[in-house]
Length: 493
Figure (tube, rainbow, N blue to C red):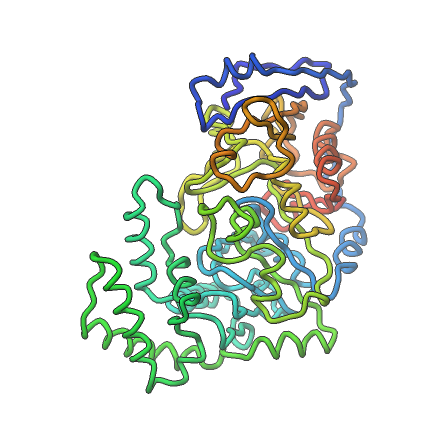
């Protein structure tokens, strides 16, 4: 929704109104807004504030981190790209193990080391920059070996040691180049109904796993039967997709390539189920790093515009082989606004000036694909839904600084059907999602650069109000607030 024509009363703390989903009928945005407006105005005094460049008390953040449970997790609340990697990187130095439990190289986590150097990780857990941390790629992950080795080589060339620090589950499924080809063919086949995948082969690889003709990491130890298994996979793809060409030479080349890969991967291969459970018995601290996010969950997301795994809390146990009772604190990562890539419903998407402003201010372009992300206002209904599913103990609100240039900030606080009937939770029905109306509250912006702030109490009152209103609406405390990309740009609340 384009809001450039609206202004906020200087004495208003919030306004609430309903607006039709802008993606459904963008040409009628303004008339629908006027027709459905329901304004509530409250007075508020303007309170000046100034930045403090003095760091928060040294023990405050440390106490917050060290109080996390033995087995904790960082999971995405929205459609991915929330900034999970940064929090994992910060927390990792206080954990012995960082583990990935699902997804594949479609997860793009951007993190920065202490010198400010940027690293884009896809398969390797974000704990790799902390020298004492062991990184585990669990059985629920699909592993593209050429990509994994390229990532390891890139880290090593930049002075990050990976030797003896990465364990790959012997039960993880292998993602082959042909899975990526099939991914593209499948998207082309869907034409206008395409999912908008990263074309990294994730879906086709999970499909091979589910129909039980997939190849696992442990199969690399049996090169006598590997060619037959690979032939079955390739033949199946050729029979399904006319554009996929397969012949004897392809099989021979792939087998020879994977013989070399098997030799290089051998030092990494581990029974990670045993390793993880032994580590739990030894009281080692474990941090689970989620890929993608709850709104992309195969069961709970905006199906079929979802990923092929379970990025919500349930995927931790199945993707690592650990019991539910050992799970402790789950931290949900939520951007201060909403973004998504690819197709699918996005109730609070802004198709106008504000959407463009958020995209460029937040550098909303995919780590994995470079695609521009769709942008819009924070959707509280979807966030509450995500919190219900995962049982988050706390939230990390990221990219709050991106909102700093806005004079007013909208919060999507409720859904309604076209006839005005309230919708209690996130609908499963795509048609309902595309046709619903969103109730918004409008909060005042703070028009101040907050990227240098270190203490919550020094944030502008309007910024604090925004944070606390989110807490109030979802019922989960926000313990971490991101105000920039660097490691030190994190406020502990």
